[in-house]
View (cartoon, rainbow, N blue to C red):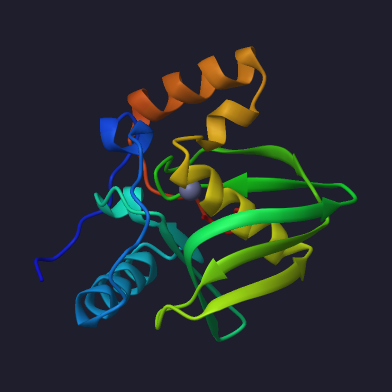
Length: 171
Ligand SMILES: [Zn+2]
């Protein structure tokens, strides 16, 4: 397949509707491999398909040497709350607090199309929800206050800088 490239805000594809993954064949495996490559090149720990220019309900999260492939994920339940700094590969240099549930259970398919229910907590819950937001066109800055959102857009458009040292993981 063609090499994918990272899409950065305000690329319109980040807001577009995504289609469910229907075909769990070799093409999907190529797409996932290419998304993982792109995520690693940009030092991310998670990447959703729209960030790679594909309007698909598909995301990858690589955490503690485990690759999670989330195809057609749906949130089944959530509990608790956590606050934490979040970054996004599509918003280089932008970070901010996002309140998320502490623990979630999702239903999704893996790379072979097997249906799974997965329960995760802490950082993985945050990462999964961040990627699932992308599949609905919901972006990091949508979680910010209006003032912080306006400042973030300004900073992004002004600097176009890549991630800074010592910042939280980018998703
Ligand atoms: Zn993101």
